[in-house]
Length: 362
View 1 (spheres, rainbow, N blue to C red):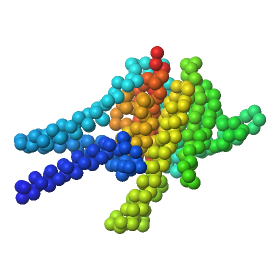
View 2 (cartoon, rainbow, N blue to C red):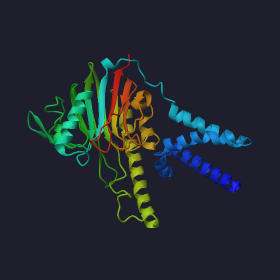
View 3 (cartoon, rainbow, N blue to C red):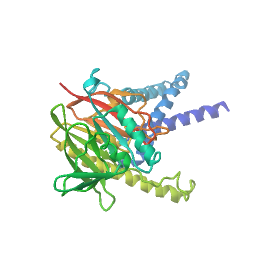
View 4 (cartoon, rainbow, N blue to C red):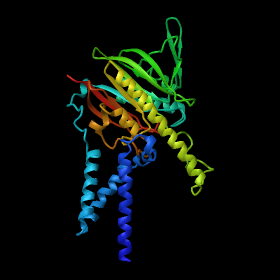
């Protein structure tokens, strides 16, 4: 019996190590070759925690030097990923008084409290945080442009930022698309907004909002993103799903693989935009990818992840009731340094907002 438990323990350890390594590698290997590892990467922090706990049991084995060496390598990988290879990057001192505060929030109409309560709660939250820039996702805003004026229309919780909230939003112009799902509001001067359409084949488009603004007299650009999700069809909500049916598994495997490939394609297109950008910029939004996924890593390379370098707390933004994953981000170009970042406790959506404070580098 003792031998059985010993072999079972080594078997569980081997499975844990293999899953950890697969999830760890997901950000480096394009999903075209390794798409399923992206799903494992969502749970990478928890796999890492289990490996740390397993340290005690590994080192209690007196003669397992090979295992100890393997385990030390795994612990080194954990330290590099989670303790931080970037903790110093872009971090600044205590200068929050002169900071540019930005907030990104996926805030669709179909989640959260009833419309009046949602509007009032959102207005109070924005009033407490006082961000200079607010970027929303899945929050439709329509523009009605005449010869000299632009009027807006949308859900009350969205339009309340403008009246009476005091924020401005820039219309796209009479010859541009008349609505956006990713509006950007500002209490800083806003100069121009562009709606960029990303469409792969005949599928639904993904939109990127590019907004020019000025901070402390210098021009900059704000990119507001919402990358491809896995879709509304979820196995835990599907009445026809059969856990033991290969047809169910194949169907969801095709759906998830396609979503991951589409998201990777979007990340490549957006990275090209950022590489061509002439002005300092900030990128924020719902990436639908954890920090261990390929899409995030492709976009965040050479940029500063605000929460990564200066975050306070766990940082999970999804799900709002149990924030097990960080999929909403604020990234900054080399001209910015990060003063702080946090995730307020809010339940107006299935996401939580992310707030970051930035300043110009000297």
